[in-house]
Image 1 (cartoon, rainbow, N blue to C red):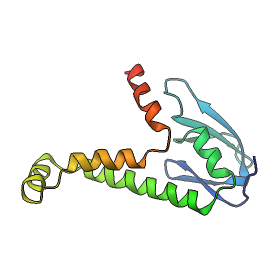
Image 2 (image 1 turned 120 degrees about the vertical axis):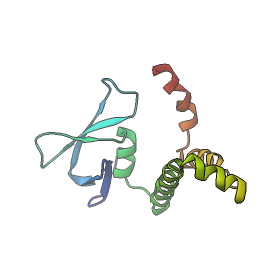
Image 3 (image 1 turned 45 degrees about the horizontal axis):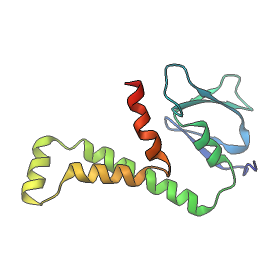
Image 4 (image 1 turned 180 degrees about the horizontal axis):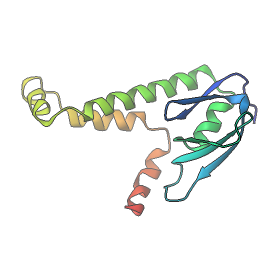
Length: 132
């Protein structure tokens, strides 16, 4: 894998690290579903950083990728942020929006979440039911 130097890699939890300073990734499997968190080992810290992203997602950001891939990831993150914000709309306001503006907030949350999922995520979506 070719790692592009000086690229800031999002680790989740508001943490970023330079791609060329990351020396190891270890998925955290205990008490977690697959692809949930990763320990990130760096050249400058003795203890790993706990990332909220999967090993695969971090590796993908570290590797040489086109600007288009970064734009797609940015759009996915924006869709997720909008869906999160719409999920927080109170029920009373949802009913008002549905009645007065014919805006179905629940439908838009579902559409935004499905549009923001990476390809192949649909096949893993049903697996979370196994752990509930």
